[in-house]
Amino acid sequence: MTGPRLVSILRQGSYLIASIHTALDDTQMTAFQDDLVERIGRDRARGVVIDVAALDVLDSFATRTLRTIGEVARLRGAVTVVVGIQPEVAFAMVALGMDTGSVHTALDLEEGLAFLDRVVGSRRPVTTLRGGAG
Amino acid sequence: MSVQGTETTTAPGAPGEDQLLPQLVAHLREHRARLRQEWSERIQQAGLLHAMTPQEMAAETTSVYDNYVEVLETGSVEALRRYARDLSERIIPRGVETHEVVGIVLLLRDVLARSLFEKYQRDFGLLNRVLDAYEPAANRIANTVAVSFVEERERVIRQQQDALRELSTPVLPVRERLLILPIIGVLDSERARQLTEQLLTGIRTHRARVVVIDITGVPEVDESVANHLVQTVDASRLMGASVIITGLSPKIAQTLVTIGVDLSKMDTIGDLQGGLEEAERLLGYTTGRDDGAAAP
Image (cartoon, rainbow over all chains, first blue to last red; front, side, top):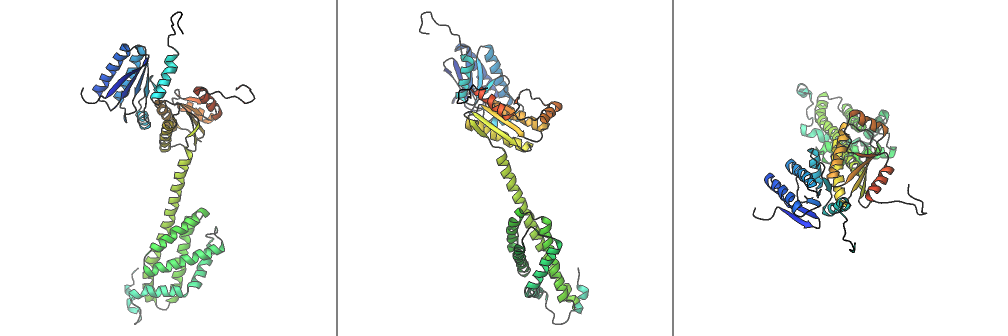
């Protein structure tokens, strides 16, 4: 793939932040799904934030892919939250009967990270070395 | 109404066609006071415009009369249209009805026609030609006034509808991250769409995490309204906000269950107070009294 990156996947602590910068076609969307699922394992991520704020449309394939990513990520041990769905996009999705299923949603990146902290943070293993500072 | 047959009976030296209207106008100007008075009496007899005081009535009838004669003279209804709009604007809030406005204009037309009968009664041919000139103009005037009145009234109605729409769907922040949306009045698809849009924009602007929609003021909920509510809830969820619906009356609740709308995804609480308490709980607020008494 040449030219500017369509998607960036960044690591932030035990979370992955995936930003979609521009509308993806079905092939690109599938490639994104593969990349992300692979990165979850490689980075041992506990949470995934998918930021779709730059998109002014989410079609049914994209919505289904997001839902699939959520399911797959859960099986790989990470919680997924989709953030940045714009009002018009939300309205259109509902009007077309599409939803994100069991995938959580939050207003923006900040809210998404806060959500992960609430959900994942409470499940974080608290193993400390004996004699450690704690 | 043809006058061809009577043409020959016209006395020599009678005015030409182009002289008829000016002559008519001169006649109406000359007898202005008497005709206007006669007209006012007819209006009173007919019981029209009782919302106006006698003084207002005198002032308005004079203006209408003068405008009327002016249209006959110039043939242009522009000034009259402006006046009629302006008049309508003043009298619509007073509760004057369309039939009254049309009624008084038609009365004036009749009063003036009668005076023409009187003036030209000795020359039937001339009377016919005068009426030929007068009637189209008079009808045009009646038309103009009626249309102006109705247009003005429609404008007022539109304006009020807009105002009502704006007023009736406020999205109010009550606490940080908490919005309430009280819905008052009938919810149709157009309004539901607008409401959802406003709510979604509000969620983004106020970074809301919880929204309480209060439908105490909605008189009736049918299947399509219920589906709209479900859509609103889903769309809000996509933007990361949870929605609590409050104020479902017993009747509405029973209707919804009877028609079998799927409300399983909806979080409902009896009244607005309970909804706000639940919303605060979701957001992690605790409310207590100053004297140390524990919150319920």
